[in-house]
Amino acid sequence: MKQAAPSANRKLSFVIPVFNEQDNLVPLVEELSGVAAGLPFTHEIILIDDGSSDDSLTVIRELSRTRPQLKYLALARNSGQSAALAAGIQAASGEVVVTLDADLQNDPADLAQMLRHYGEYDMVTGWRHNRRDSLAKRIGSLIGNFVRNRLTGETIRDTGCSLKVMRASLLKRIKWYRGLHRFLPTLMRLEGARVIEVKVNHRPRTRGTSKYNNWRRAIDGLYDVLAVRWMIKRQQTVVVREQHLDD
Ligand code: UDP
Ligand code: MG
Image (cartoon, rainbow, N blue to C red):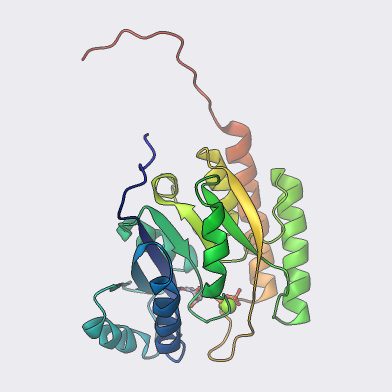
């Protein structure tokens, strides 16, 4: 498949899954719009309401009435972060997809430096070197990343960081399954992407609560890593030497 040619009017699509984040949405969209205005791209912000039971969807509808760049999808039921991301990515119309969380833990100010690597790399993925989460969560991630790297041959320090800049044409080829958002650097590499990990800022969550606990994440992660390992080992590379096909 051909990669999208850079055009004069390059566009970023922000893809943001939302599950019960009602108090984060106004500051999120305001901060993101401010940062996006300073970048050499046009942009759209796609919020995916993942079946929230709070007022997130009402806030999203309200925000979208006055902001033409703001688009949204509302899923019929809570389907998980991977499903919400997949739906948003399919809807994205930009050359570049930027994913981040809705809870303001990722810092959009990092985008300028991340985008400087884009072009030489097809994926620029964040590494939360100053992680602002509980000790239990940080230890859980350390173990998770270690096991994942050992079993997949990766060297990514922080695959759980949602702040990622990705070439849309490669990202859209990925077939999504539940939990696979934790393996995006590997899945992008399987599609031929050049991947770089860069240090990014991380902020504490000040509103709403985390949607994950370590046990669930560990059990799911272990199950999923075996599937991704299988994908790597079973990847087929076909090089055609000669062909004579119908027009
Ligand atoms: N999220 C989602 N569906 C879910 C769980 C989470 O859309 O079933 C969203 C959530 O609203 C947030 C992002 O995914 O924007 C990451 O979740 P969270 O901040 O709880 O994860 P943590 O930072 O604690 O790892
Ligand atoms: Mg978070």
